View 1 (cartoon, helix red, strand yellow):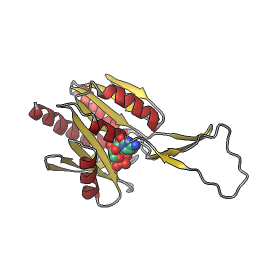
View 2 (cartoon, protein in one colour):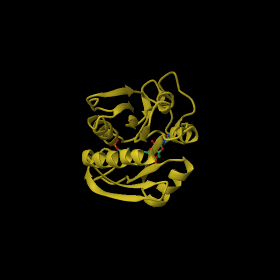
View 3 (cartoon, helix red, strand yellow):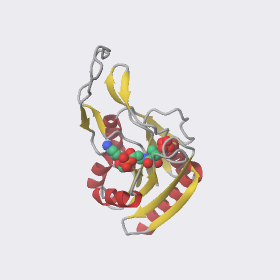
View 4 (spheres, helix red, strand yellow):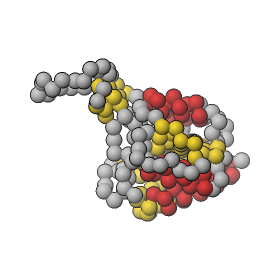
Length: 214
Ligand code: PMT
């Protein structure tokens, strides 16, 4: 299968020396890419800035902002059989980029933000027949309810619901727990384990689903 995976955070520039980002380390997305490649799939990874080494036999493309990720993913999605969006794409970006470093003159300043493009929702609208589209849902409350809403709203085949905001899982941790929910209502609970072992299970489930669909 031709597999497209996203990983890591995006950086949204405020001025030449500052940006808005999040705590994504890229570990989850890289583990998925490494596993899929080891299983013999043709994998392309689009990643934000991380300090991880590109997995063996994976074509890795590094981007910085949500807009750059949108551009690459849109281009690569056309030829992908399975797309897994594990990246933590910024939902907002500064409305204006200050071309000079913002001076420390005022006690309080505000930065106006505008919404970024929802890349996954866009892929849901242009999904090819037979293409499997998988999103992640990073939630701090009402995990399954919010994940199901994203699954429907973004026209996904599967969503990987994971809890964030805890030290032992989610962002940056080596471990994670997830519940996979399919559009047909299948629910698979994967308890807390290393991201590598979780990735094995997720890839097995998603590639079996592909076989079943064809
Ligand atoms: O990188 P690690 O440190 O290993 O951490 C892993 C992780 C916690 C980042 C990962 O498991 C995870 O949950 N990734 C998704 C994070 C996220 O942005 O979730 P969300 O619920 O806000 O977004 C839902 C989906 O829409 C995601 O698939 C996201 O990639 C996608 N999205 C979001 C915003 C946007 N503008 N475009 C998108 O495509």
